[in-house]
Image (cartoon, rainbow, N blue to C red; front, top):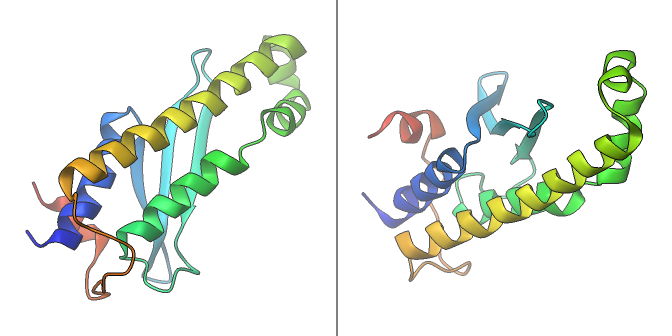
Length: 147
């Protein structure tokens, strides 16, 4: 398997092995990124979009790493708490304090995910760097289907 495919496979496998479901996202038949999904300890379904639509090459492994990093960095536990507390069912199930702790923990979980994915990436392809040329003639569908 060439380095680029090996790198992408390592990233996606590491996300999966961290307990997140990886779902290929397409628009009009074009691969645009991934939704990653997992649940907080108290059962809140969290779905994040790794958006590759604006990437120069969506099959550049560093584009995927950057998208994952953005999800982690831009996740705001306070904002998430505010949004969820507006829902009647959520407000009934969680106190404000419980919700805040749930989403603070989730922020930490996203940071741990970034660390574990970066580690798996570096172990799988230690010589890969951003200045390399990467093919755009791939499909994530095929990469995800390979064993």
